[in-house]
Length: 366
Ligand code: TXA
Ligand code: MG
Image (cartoon, rainbow, N blue to C red; front, side, top):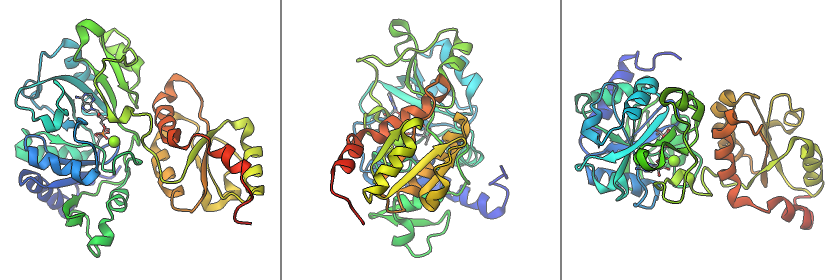
């Protein structure tokens, strides 16, 4: 990737973003996973603006983003060796650690829980922003920069689309304040997020009693974690800390989405189209079915890394083609695909039964 800090304008936008954060404002910024909507983690009024902009319930905790080399002991307590080992192995990078929170962390950040999620992102703009903010000693609370429950943004334009920034303030320029629902959001440009799905979340706050727990799968796999700490993270139990990204319905476009197995795909497309249903399709590998659909078809790579990079952009693009349904060819069910399959499962949750309904109904649009 080109160094997006390289131009004087980009450097000035990042410096301005740091000042906005210090003044209690909101800054949307690129990370290697997805774009975040950031505020000063130590300013409860600023964090409250995140919840307001997202329309997110305010008992949901947000991740604190810190600069490389940040003092972990300032943010969290009772830090197990495993946390330091994982931070050393994967930071800066797409891994969030849940640990016991330090007493000065506002309830607004932890959602009232006794833990906090912390991560050091690797995107150069995120690093530059975090290093400039409070001289690298601050923490930026940032959920993904989308309305609650929607698909996460992987470009600056996705963020502007999500909060209608271009509509509200004519020609809102990257790095310039724009207005969203009475809130100002400064958007920093950083190209397309390289990973494309949110960070892996590991709960280490109950290590002694429960061992490491994988709250959200991502680019860094459970096996990679085990290779560092010698213990494979378990699936979440009932008492595991709450994570909104683990709600059954999340990451969902407005158009219904449904998974269809490869073998049933051609027949399903044909039957739906015969009923006059407008079909959009995300295939992978060498699927022959996407090309004939033109703008309504998207072909993603058959490897989980390339697929993760493209999936949110594909869902967002197909949400705009006025399809009645977005079909997604079911990806492989292997461990390496866990992060992708986790997000897709939640994207389709609210659309259960949509295919049966379309196939039962009278023909449409014919
Ligand atoms: O890749 C990412 O993690 C992105 C980028 C911007 O860093 N952020 C992100 O934030 O995905 P968000 O808020 O959309 O998802 C964070 C997830 C939520 O499901 C939240 O509930 C969970 O992390 N989380 C945050 N703090 C937590 C805590 N103390 N205990 C349990 N879950 C926590
Ligand atoms: Mg999110």
